[in-house]
Image (cartoon, rainbow, N blue to C red; front, side, top):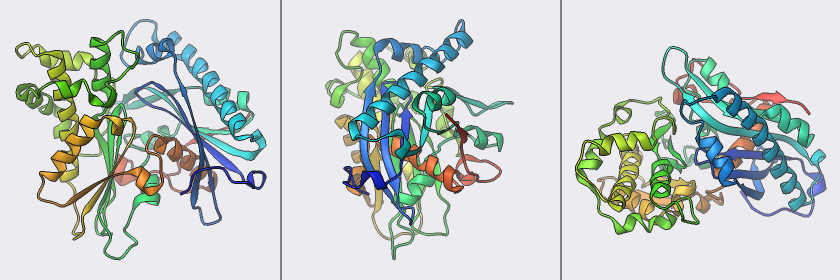
Length: 394
């Protein structure tokens, strides 16, 4: 995989991947092409942050409240217009015309994900039809719904993509590989070196969600919406009683397939745990949340292994890799294990970790066009694997 646009742009046809994650901080775009062997090349990226007003509108829909339908579907159109503006800005940045884009793979913005219950559902907004109409480019979106119709969790969506990029199964004496994406929620993909084992993928639990929310609660005047580098967490001490309580949540006892969201792991969930304990300083809570996130990631990794004799490679990506406190905790937890782990960043595979999910949705649009299987039933629990997505024409 390489970066940077080439001089023969006009001969290429591109896909654009569009991602807006549960952190609700902005829009990530990736410009991608594929050769005749389906090899992916990442050419360019674009990021458009959300205003505080838009972020607040998104996060206010994570849990039930008043007038939800009007608020959600007004925002559905507002986000589509913002997505379209970002796409047009990317085209302008790269001096490309809409005719050079085959399709946009749009994840949309998840506002509710309910994989459990009698009638499981998931809801992503950012109207695909509006996006297609405003850009003049066909859009492939609503990737989660078919998997859920087939009885799956509708998440995680990226393990099939991870397998195409990171798996070492085809190599002689390859390594087990884990890809850990630390977004608002943290998801893991296990790519075993041996074909005797299945690819596994699921949400390990919270990623940046609680860290960001707790920081913002105690730093309302900060220019940042997150604990930059984990510096505030580094001033606190881990509270073992709180850590044990957080880790005792039923979600961490569940076997995969499983997925979760910010409608489960949120400030009210955290405050409920805190009510049962003596007063804890705000920075100690933040320090504990860092270790909590690291432990849930590493516990998940340690549950899976094949018979590979080589060091297990763990690739980190997502916004959480910029939190030095969190990254150091993950490394410490891995090094304390009896297995040999090598902690890496996806950048070491020439993939920008901040852009990995946007690139993945460009690949999902490509898979739709080529009718490739892009879901893994063993990962999501669906009755069969399928080609994900629906097409929306300008």
